[in-house]
Image (cartoon, rainbow, N blue to C red; front, side):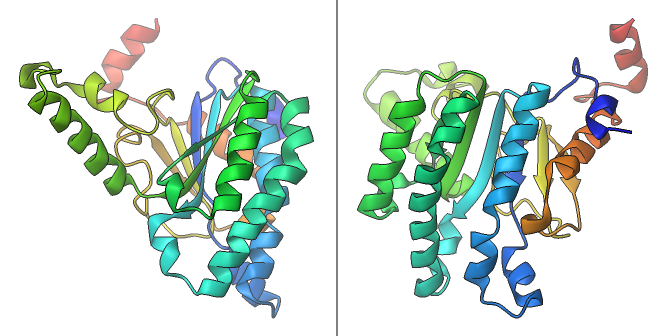
Length: 250
């Protein structure tokens, strides 16, 4: 049976976040350098975006490069930055065809100038697309994001632009990189690792977590649908009891 047909289109998560893990292990398994795995992961990215758009997911966020990834060997970092540039250019026609709005979060000023320029160009060219928002987390760390939000809120308090008593969840949300995105409903991590790895800590407060043994370069549309089906088979209570959920659904 077609996996897509098993999905209830009325209960699709609005926002799916993915930790794309396993590129290095996939490459080593083939006797190649880690960069080979990164280069062969583009198909997985493309199929995941297409799958999300097909079933009505409104936002998909990919953990493309963390703040900690800067500590990797310089050769690998340089290769990843070059891959980012070529991939954005190569995928632009696909973004336009499928109505993908490209967004980016993180300390983008740390990216090489050419990468910043290409990213800005693609964001500008796709800004009117509205079918699905693709957010690339680049030079991103959730703790850094929260620290920056606290600093910016504190400045407003000091400058009498904001009262301490006015600080609530909405205020914090509005100072995060993801201020224009809904909270994460589903987080997918490939490669068998079961960690969040400093990714969208605030936004994933009530997300369903889905871990798969599949290495990222092997992840395909059907695997994405498997995650959605698992998500739909779970009961999301948000602190309520099962009985309360059943009553509210009647």
